[in-house]
Image 1: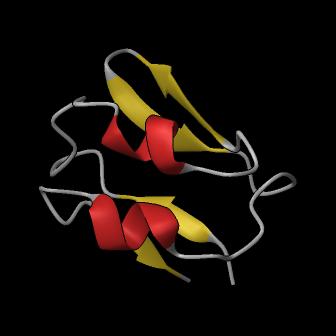
Image 2: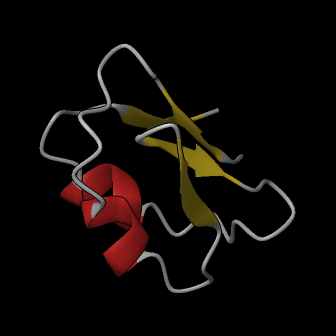
Length: 57
């Protein structure tokens, strides 16, 4: 499984960028983007996202 971002829900707060232990999340056009090759499936971003824009697939 890998974290996926719903761009419609993402507010660009960057909370997920700060909590990601593998630096898999970056910002592009003020939206979070997950690099599936770096994501370690820890779900830290899912737990911390205030807008519930991230889920695991």
